[in-house]
Length: 163
Length: 192
Image (cartoon, rainbow over all chains, first blue to last red; front, top):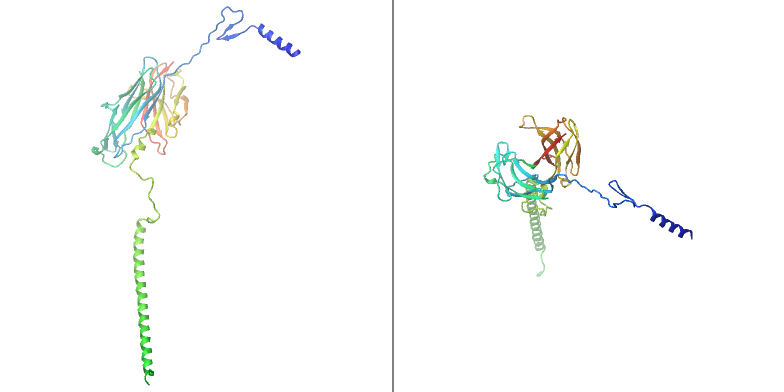
């Protein structure tokens, strides 16, 4: 009997308590005229991107045309801007060792051949999340003017800018 | 005394038999000597040849089997595989307080480079001549999956907007720490 009385009392008290919902500092009570509240939910998407570049390219006597890729992903840009990637060769597209040098070419997306340094190879506009460019490295080693045995090298710098 | 051998005849017969055995014995001895000589010669030739071979290949070729790893040349393929790519992560503008040397950044080596590349970061701004650049900060090697969030600049900066470059240099995780192709990320640096 005591238990039943306790349950009934609890229900009556709970029903009689003023309901409170707190949202962004707004208190809504049973007596409030406007019983709606608002909650701001936000996330600030920072400008960001991820670029994958060929770390190294190795020619051999049998491997004189090498296809590699340059990839951009997870791109997040401000509206109206674009992500641009240019390439610059330290030795003007020559592999150098001591006094000797070996020419090579870089062909972008199967057709464009940079004739100057700082050449654009990929543009990704705001709103696009990814982009890819094909890079073909070609060297006619048979015509190379290599004087000595040794490691002939060049270094490429990929410059990323948001314009 | 017909049908009976005389003592002389018996003596002659025994003498003849004795000679035969002697000749057979001598022939046998000669044969054995010949075999020994031939075997010696053969052993000599074998030892000389073996000695010559030992000088070139101390272990000879005995016990060798065809190497299952031998195949057509493919060294170039592995050196130009997709695994030879490096991932570089970029952010938007940098914001530094005026004249403050201790500043916050996020220089990150993506975890995709694990086991292959370390990265170093260099923060550059144009120098006063406008032709070169000044290095405000240079990191050491950063492992894949790790960030640098707090750095000390070489000097605090005046208020303004700077065209900064974050130069990212990957290094192979070999003993030589070979430098690879690299990236320059142009970044706006706001100092206020």
